[in-house]
Image (cartoon, rainbow, N blue to C red):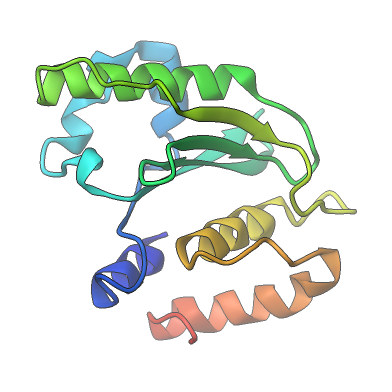
Amino acid sequence: MNLLIERSQQKKGILPSVYSMSTVFLKRVFECGFDAVKCWTSKIDVFSKDIILVPVHCNSNRWCMAIIHFKNKTIFYYDSLGYPNDIALDVLKNYIIAESLDKRKVQYDMSGFRIENVLNGPQQTNGSDCGVFSCMTAEYITRGKPLTFNQEHMSYFRKKMILEIVHGQLWK
């Protein structure tokens, strides 16, 4: 996720601005409430970003991706096994409202926001590629590209991600 943030900073004005929450963010705000995470964004104005990535560790055994897209007024939840997560969407909506009240001292206007589970996104056909699907969903969306990948691309994406992490830079 850090490489996606770096790319958005390097291509400011060309690509959407991006911030990523910690992998434990959603679990923490769900279990402990907004007060437990409000200091996590003390140095960042999340509302100044176009896209907020929220990696979701589902049931402690797989990964999904939630994406808050302020510019498009959407909160979408992507699960490559096709399971909806209305609780995660509700927690994120309430987080945005609480974050605005805490940091901006104003009620955030959620009218016009589409909040939904994306059930027609790329789907995995095995039990081991959820993390790659989640990362690639974030990668495509932060480039403004349609989600056109599928299970057949996973072997390539795994190798590509390893090289990107080792070299500290995303491929073009």
